[in-house]
Amino acid sequence: MRSAGHWLRHLVLLCGALWLLLPIYVAIVAASHDARDLLGNFPWLPGHRLFANLHHILFEGLPSAIPVWRMLLNSLLMALGISLGKLVISILSAYAIVYFRFPGRMIAFWLIFVTLMLPVEVRFFPTYRIAADLHLLNSYAGLILPLIASATATFLFRQFFMTLPQDLVDASRLDGAGPMRFFFDMALPLSRTNIAALFVLEFVYGWNQYLWPLLTTTHPGYETVVMGMQGVISAANGFAVPQWNQVMTVALLALVPPVLVVLMMQRVFIKGFTETGK
Image (cartoon, rainbow, N blue to C red; front, side):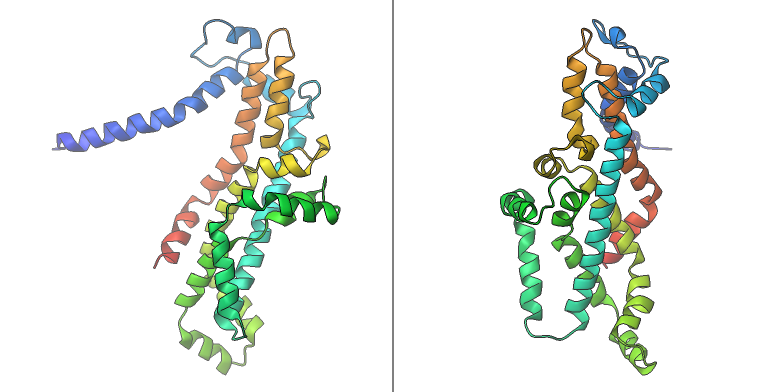
């Protein structure tokens, strides 16, 4: 027979889950009603206009705001560019630090490691100046390139490579494998769970960027969905009846891609971090 403590733990867990899901439920309810229905008493049951609101906000948008499909595309390109760029740079730099012996190797590693203590926001002004001098403003390159270096990913890949046995390296040398063949045939396949785990983290990081796109883009065509929310709210308040149903619809759409990435890669995401911690 289950003890009282067992049921109490499940009750606390259920209450916590419901509390976390409450804002999402409120957003779904608001997005499924007409704007007039949200005036006065808030309806606590979903309406029937969810798909109509989704279609309207995706392909037509609000006046003075670009259609949300364009914002989602910009966010997707930025998140993919940042995540893939961080992975490529981090795994190559970690591989060089672990397997190559060159002067200043450890100094290079510690310089990368120290940047972990430096908040990204502190580097925004000099990074903005460099991006402006290179004519990267109002471009996808300007959104992506300044954010593709990651000390955290470099550190995690270094720790994983250090767990690979030296016998594996020696056996590859006896087979005539050079450094790059060892990288592509051994190090890269063995790192796939770590790569997947870091991809999830970096995708969500890139998707949620707000301040950097706000600094580097003034053209509406480069607005990301997180950055464009403020414009959508301003446009919604310009109506005689504030269009909060449309605002909640945009919020739901902004939530979908990162949630899908996490759900699709949940198993490998957890496995990647448990293997890194061994």
